[in-house]
Image (cartoon, rainbow, N blue to C red; front, side):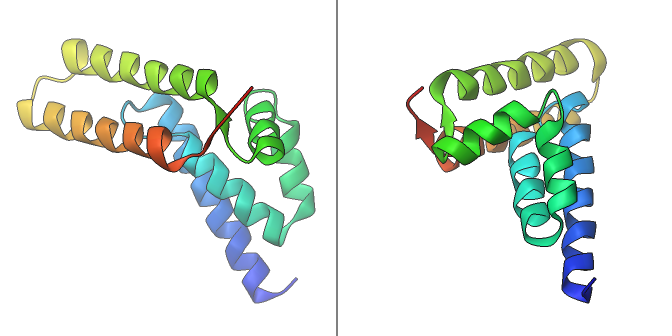
Length: 124
């Protein structure tokens, strides 16, 4: 295995970890990190890429993205809505500091921007 492939695998794994953490941490977008992981794995390890595609939660979204070169409007709306539900629950019930609430909201806005405008929208 070449040094470059090893670095890509490490970066892909780190990106996947951040994406998985993003499922639980409001405001941290999951989809861009998972897409980055797929891109890094496809360049470095077919075995890891196939494993990623075979996962129940992530595989269908990656296959859809790969096949259609983007996400459907429904998938985007579902991702953005679930992200904001978690953000609002966190801000209203779990975070007391106003500055931290603002940081989470700004990160959520960035995630919404990335999902809404940077990830291509395709027809279903």
